[in-house]
Structures are given as structure tokens and as C-alpha cells.
Image 1: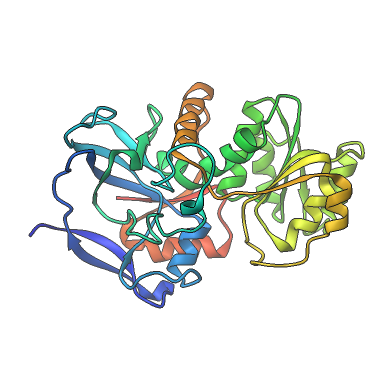
Image 2: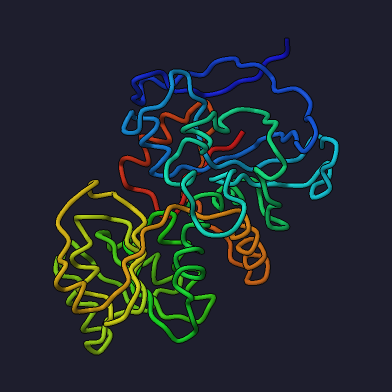
Amino acid sequence: MASQKAVVVRAPGGLDQLERRDVSDPGQPGAGQIRVELHASSLNFHDLLVANGGIPAADGRVLMADAAGKVEAVGEGVTEFEVGDNVVSVFFPQWQDGLPFDEVGNFRGTPGDGIDGYATEYAVRAATDFTLAPRGWSHAEAATITTAGLTAWRALIVDGQLKAGTSVLVLGTGGVSIAALQIAKAMGASVIATSSSEQKLEHLRALGADNVINYRLTPDWGREVLALTGGHGVDHVIEVGGPGTLEQSIKAVRVGGHIALIGILTGRQGNVPTMTLMAKQARLQGLIVGNRRQQQDYVTALEQTGIRPVIDRSFPLEELADAFRFQESGGHFGKIAIEW
């Protein structure tokens, strides 16, 4: 039986438990399926939690939710893709369109978590597990779409209904925040961005941030956002920190504004200033990535706007553990890619 290389995590997890091994080649696609020659992935906080054991996974789980590659074969009945098409995976294969439902309230159907992911050479999946990648993009660039890019798109465009002339606050310089900055500027919004690094703040300005705040030097950065907006606050907050930053985000948002609760970088639970949130009459919207239709819309927008993702550094597949260690260090700006 033919085999292929893959990177798996051994239970109970930990970066020293990542293992490169031979797994079975998936073979040819059946009806409704495509075979994809995979070439890239990108790292997200969710992938790190699976790898380090923060989210328990089955022993020997193939890692990584994000994937980009080239269609090698199509099964009977597949009309959306042709051999040679560049494609990118979807985070929730079971969520094709519409509003969230029970099966996307967990990660049981998400590659690299509840099912095997894409840290491998080939995949045979339902055609609907992928969308076309933007024309002219590298596989590494396309792999940033699945999780981080689509999360930013849904937060601002789908849930936030972002309009030109509005204001957006992005926290930090991870993949979601950088994608949100780029989307917001392309849509004609103004952006305030935060970081603890003066060098990263300069990079944020170069990407188009209208104002930047060093949150280490200005711990009460919510008040600074109010000052920068004439006391009104911002229309949208891309909240990736969680309990450690939510109080400041609520302070920073305008009355009637929108906070997209995306990340838990500072912990999984904490106190919420409910009185302030009520007084602001702000909408605190939790979200995890999005559906396939939204990803298709996002790809269309990327082609129209010319946005290209920011990739800090790329690692070969066999150095996935080192890539995660680099992610843990917090030194990256934008995305970390894996290419093979």
C-alpha cells in the first residue's frame, strides 16, 4: 500500500510529542470528492492548542486545519473543480452556508482537531471541503485564508457590516488582526492598532494603521482610543485577547458599537464589566471562523482588492514543532507558514 509523510501529535500532546511518520496514501477520489496535492499550511492559536495538548486530540491525530494545494484528480460528479486548480481548505466542512448550528458549536468536524488535518502530502476529501484559492497567490498565501483570514472577514463584513468611514480597533499583530487591518483599510475604514513593540507599531503604520498605541506603555489603552476618537469610541473592535483585554475593549467601543470576540490569548474565562457593556449598548459577538460561502465571498474580495497576506516566516513541514515554538514566542508579525 502506498504511503505518504505526515506530522501527527501523540497523546496527551506537547510539542515534544509531534512525530513525523508514514501514513496511508488516501488513493483516488470517489464520487463527489477531489484529491489534492498539498503544499502549505499556516499556524493558528487553535492549531497550537491541539499540538501542545491544550485541546485534547486523539493519539496520532494529523495536525493543521489550514491547507492549500493543487487538485490532482476529481471524482465522479464534481463540476466545481478541475485538475490543476489551486484550492484552499475550509475550517468547518459541514458548514456550507447560513447561520451557525449545533454541529459547528465544537471542533469535532474540524481538520486537525476532531478529524485528521492537512500536515501531510495528499488529501482526498469532499469537493465541498475546499474552495478555489485567489488567482496568482502562492500556496502559502492561500493557506492563510482558512482560519485567520476568514475570521477577520466574517467579523468585519458579515457580522459587523463594515462601511466606509467607520473606525476599527485591532489588537496585536497576529494573523487575524493583520487581516482585519487590511480588510478595514480596503473598505475605507480608519484603523487604530495596538502592540507592545515599537518596531511592530512601525510595521502597522506601514500597512495603513491611522493611529497606533503601545499597550505596554499605555495600559489604559481603552481611554487612549476614546481620546483618539474625540470621546466617541470605535465602531468595531477585533477582540483577540479575551478576558485580559475585554474590559479595555468595552471601554474603547462606541455606544452601539460592535466587539467581535475572537480569541482567548489571555485565558478562557474572566470578569466582564457588564454594567459598562450595558451602558454602551454594544454588541459583543462571539465567533469561530465562518462558513464555505463566506470563504468564497472573501476570496472574491481578495482578488478585487489586491490584498495579499503578511507572512512573517515559513518553515518546512518537518520543522512544524519549531514553527509552533516560534509562534509561542510571540515574535511574529502576521502569519507563520508551513511549506512542502
